[in-house]
Image (cartoon, rainbow, N blue to C red; front, top):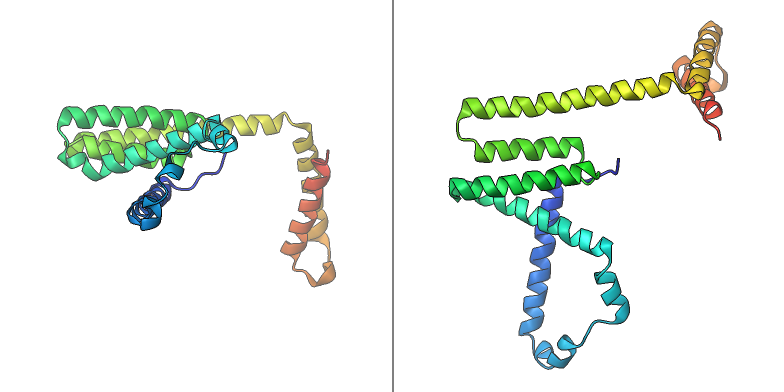
Length: 205
């Protein structure tokens, strides 16, 4: 899965970037130089830049920025929204969380934090809020258990892994029986070194 930064950091960075860009644009617009270059401001973008801005990657980036802005704005103003609007906006954010999590744009941990925050922002009853937060935690715990079970099953059916496990037991026995270890290493350090070599040998292409 693609590694992502915590959304709180991303949202904060997006806020700073957006604020900085807005200030820069405002400053440019107010400057005499900007006033004297209105024709340049209206000039079409170079073809290369226009193509880049129209690319799927650029659109995906803009969508991600919109999502982060919407999430940041919702959590900042949720308490002042009417119940219907708060629920509708929370549902829209939930659908986006589903999509980004499914495509690797959000880690499981980030998704849990966001879903938990949505519950706390939209559910007033503390008992029901606690139940829904617990249900989220249970669901993700079950998914994690399933992934671990699937990974273990793949390992059991992988001949390279089985080869390594067979050698692992032999290497451990050999190292533990050695009266001294070479190169001034501790026994644990030498054992880790040997096992790493066995892993590289087993999984070599």
